[in-house]
Length: 440
Figure (cartoon, rainbow, N blue to C red):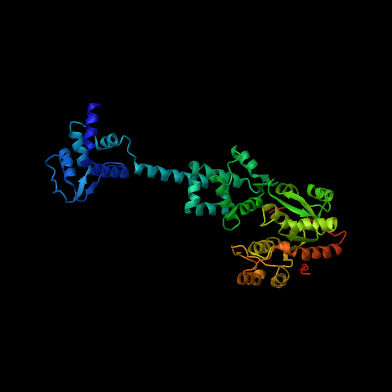
């Protein structure tokens, strides 16, 4: 005990600070005491301390000169032969009061562990699918995805592949239920967990599209394979939905004729929807829906409100209406957010603009005051909206949908007067994820 204290006091001298720090870095990096350390511009105090350990047979340089290569094995041998009879690693651990870290061994263990993660993933039954195997190959060389794959010793990647093997879910299943069934934890596949993030990346690769950039896109992607991440709070409001048959949605619609309803994502995907072919109108703002309900009630044509950018419930309903042969007519604010809404309805559900083109915009500017548009220009717009986008960008004037509500209500009244009282019934469709322009 006394010898250890004396050794600690000896090695704590300022002259040993730099040599022993460099020695520790070298030993930890290599995992042994091979090699040399260099001491540029050695100080008199360092020379005194090193000479005291290495002995006079060491060819010490003059103070201020460089020591180009001090062999660690020589320093280790000198400590072994001293009255302290200890090794260099033992001395370094005693001085720092902590064990040496073998970085070479740690790197090897990390490398072996990662190889085991990919080997286990490649042997997983889900990896037999070519699209999953291709994703695994890319993920291995993609830093962000690979780091997620190594989480929990590779358990996150295994959990992702377990979920992939169970998809698509038919009938649709809540994300928490799927996670609990497969892994015992309802939160195992949450979007903030590595397994959940990996699953979303894999599903995007299945669809050959970029990873989702937000919660709505992530929910939509999961819903495409029958996984509901927000079946209750994710909802869409609609008036006089053209649903028929004995299903829940049709029953709710009949009972609430002339009154708007809010359909949750769970309502929409729990059963196939039987939908009549009809002209269906789409607005962005709840005020338009409320005014149509107040003015027209049960006579109003079907009207769906996006309430801003689409959520998954809205997207699923519009896709189901389009698949059933309904003619969709979409309107929104004349600003960048509205352009995104209309463009997305066109691209994903086959909708047509409703009073939403360059001419309609110019007419609206003559009718109502304009305001400043939102600051973010729209991206990936449908080509038919390009002239309108260019005009909005050049003029910098936006018009909210509520300012045009009387024009929109007139269109809905005209549509109501021409509604077929007994239109044909379209096919039943699972809510998965040639028409008049109605410009007045």
